[in-house]
Image (tube, rainbow over all chains, first blue to last red; front, side, top):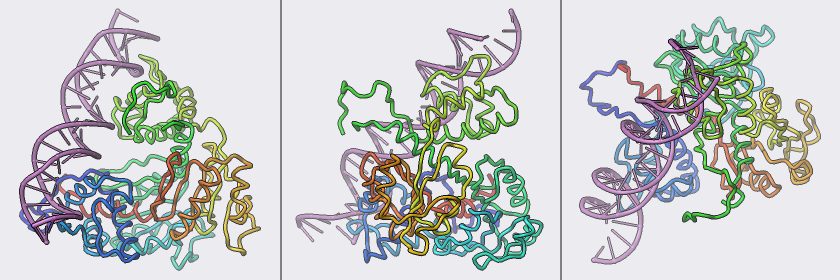
Length: 222
Length: 222
DNA sequence: TAGATTGTTAATCGATTAACAATC
DNA sequence: TAGATTGTTAATCGATTAACAATC
């Protein structure tokens, strides 16, 4: 598990800017569409213009991780998809737990997009006696007390938090204590996490606030 | 594309980095928690440490928009909340439409967090005859054909897209044609938008991919 | 006053872009 | 070959941090 210096699997661990990794996901999504549309190859400029990035940026981003392109040809779509999935770690299956089975939790349980990228929600947790014991979208709703057991038995590394803001930190603490190493938090609150646990926060109201700002501060000329 | 020095633009329109605006939303959220906890004032270093930013960054971000602090004192919480809401444009009410009433659409219709920041979903749209005519969370589900009328009559500027990827672009086009100027897109596809329309994309699978990368590329040694 | 904290400038750091030899 | 396109270096651009006079 821990890195040993002279393993020649992953020799280089240059730190990659977070922005690069998030573009990687966009490249992957775009490539999957391109393949579906029959494009066997693509170029950095095609990929860039589909996403609004420069060709140089696409090449630079990919070059962080290896030589995936073919000068004069471009990138073979299927090949690059495999490479990016391997880089992102989505070339394997990720069991995921979700805590909270309110409106949002149920929507996440029914979301089809997860499975296509290798994510599988294996259990949902709640404390509401009316919900515990039920099944939503084929997933059992268990009591939060069973969280640790389930996480440990399934070696689960990823968790989704879809509880009210007031309880999100407690839930987060329990996920981390159980061994989860990455959390997507949908509660509108800042979580405090120990080092070694990654966080992605999705605050739905904030997304709209960002648009509000853009609309209000639109430069009508530009 | 080339800069013309003295075009008669809006007097104060220094372009603010997108990252600054997104931190503004985080400051606002944090300030609202601080006020609830009885903190009448706060400092750039307190606000920063709660969010993992430097004090200098907090001050610099706020200074883009004015002088909101008091040397020796810090920032009066309520005062700064008002200022940020005014900057973000959430000091007013924003009527919003949503297209798509599947799992995710219904969750968004029931999401309580919007109203606290001034966002109010006034209508939902779908094309499924089984859904059109129903009411979800007190909001009427109308046929997509009525979108333009509703948007124009209510002067709606913001829209949420919660339809499958295959139809998201068409829905987007119709929102824009109707007059919407900002879109949150939950479909896992890149939308093509005309200039003057802002976009925030939320791809749930991508959020998990980002965590997958972090977990796989964790430098165990630090 | 002394201590605290802002707003702002200059210095540092990091990320994007332009350019081009190497390659197919 | 000629045209296309990569990977990479150097140049540019932008964002963050450090430092400090001004202020309460």
